[in-house]
Length: 384
Image (cartoon, rainbow, N blue to C red; front, side, top):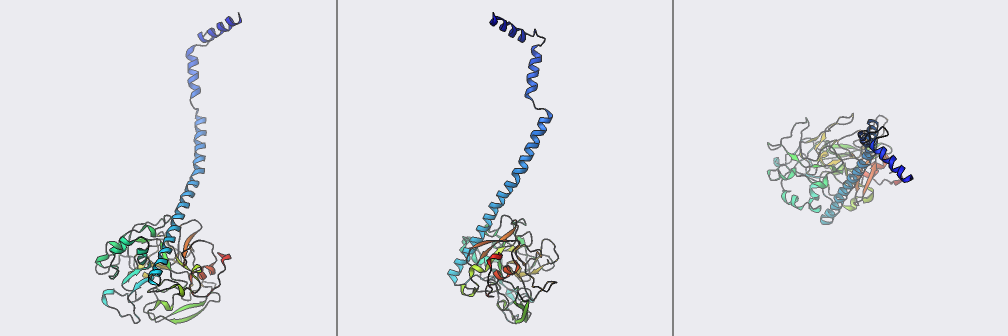
C-alpha cells in the first residue's frame, strides 16, 4: 500500500496536479544552467588576475632566455679571440688604419685630417669571423681593400647573429654611416651601410680617438686614486695613450696583459638603443651619434663605431675633482661607454674568455681597474 501511495504522489507531481506544469519545470532547469551577470564578471576578474600574475613570469622567462643567448654570444666572441691569438700570436687590432706619425698617407686610404683614421679600417670583429664560423662571410670580404671599396659594398651590410643581443631594442638591421652633422657620410661618391653589432671592444680607461691624430701630445691619468696626470707624446700612435687591449693598430699579446687576462675586460655590450655600432670597422670621417639625449651625451669620432672606454680619460674630472668613470649603464649614457638593456646590468667578456655579469652598482674604481691591462692595480673582487 505504501508503494502505491508513493507511485501516486510521483505521478501527481509529474502530471502537474500539485500546481506545477511541465513548461515551468523545464524553464527553471534551463535558467539554472546559464551564468548570471555577477558570475560572469567574477570569472572575468579571476582570469584577469591570473593573466596579470602569469605575464611577468612569462616575461621573466623570456628575458632569462635572452640573457643566456647574449652571454653565449660573448663566450663565442671570447673563444674566437683566443683562437685568433693561437693562429697569429696576438689579438686582432681594435681597427686597422694606415700608420702615420706626421699625417701623411696615400689618397686611396682617405685619411681623416683630424683623427688620422684611414683605410682599410677593418675592426676586431671582422678579424674574428674566420674563427667564429663566419668563413663564408670572411671569404667574401677583401681585407686588402678599404671597407668602402666596391668589392666589399654588399658584404659589409651583412647581419651576423653572433654580434646581436636579443635584449637590445634599437634594431638589428644594418645602418647608414653618418658624418659629424648627422648626414649620410660620402666616401668615393657613395654612402655606406654597415652591419650592426651590439658588442664592443675595450680601449681601457683612456680614450684615444678624436684627439689621437693631429694633436702632438695628450694628457693621461697616471693614478686614478689621486687624480694625477701627465702629458705624453702621441704622434699618431694610440698605443702611447691606450691602456686597454684594443685600439687603433693594436697588436696585443697575452704577455702584454700584465694585470692578468682574468682581471681584464676585453669585450662588452652596447645596445643600439643608445648608439649604432658595427662589426665591420671604422670609416674615416664618420661619427657615432647618440639615439637619445642626456647631459653628457653627444656625437663622437669614428673609433667609437667599434670601441668604448671606461674612463677616466684625458685628465677629465667631475665637479668634485674626481676622475670621470662610466661603467655599464652609467647615466652619462655616452656613445663611448658600455650599455646593456638587461635588467640590473650587463655582460662583459674577460681576456681569458670567461663571461661575467656586471651590475649597475659596480664600484667605479673596480670598473676602471678591470678595464686597464697594465696599470698594476690590485683587484678587490669583493667590490664586484
